Length: 185
Image (cartoon, rainbow, N blue to C red; front, side):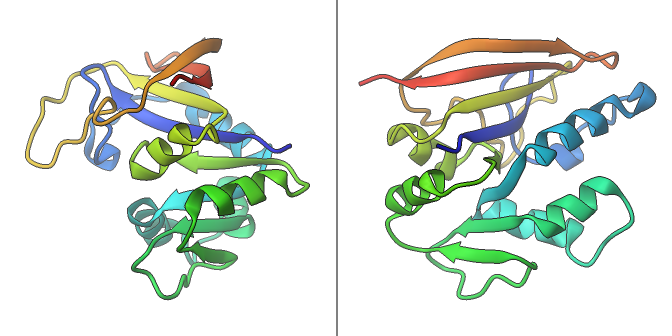
């Protein structure tokens, strides 16, 4: 059975919203890009909530020229939304109803792992239904201070036991903790 891996950026105080606006960190040797490439290469599908989908499509749709962009455009993308009527980013399909059932069916299909970005309503739904297998937190070494619209990782997070599988410290201070997710009742 395929696994679903969630990859989420988080600040030290737990903010996950608007990482594109966070302070830029030096990335000696492109370490971050290498880790992101490694992750997306082990997956053949991406599962996104509507807001993340629209944000990502705005960045990568129509671009090319580097391995990450080529891969993210090529893989199958599943967007969970009850309001989108069409998904224009290539290789995209909408999941509008019975999200847990549709995602369980995706996991049962043959193939590589499924990658999910961001920890919002979709990730919480996956956890609530025992469908999220791994959570990779990219902990950024700064506080940005909450502002209007700040979203915290722990907002409405479901109960779960996380089992540390791996920890990686990058030269720029980002620490990536990879956890196996074990739902709790």
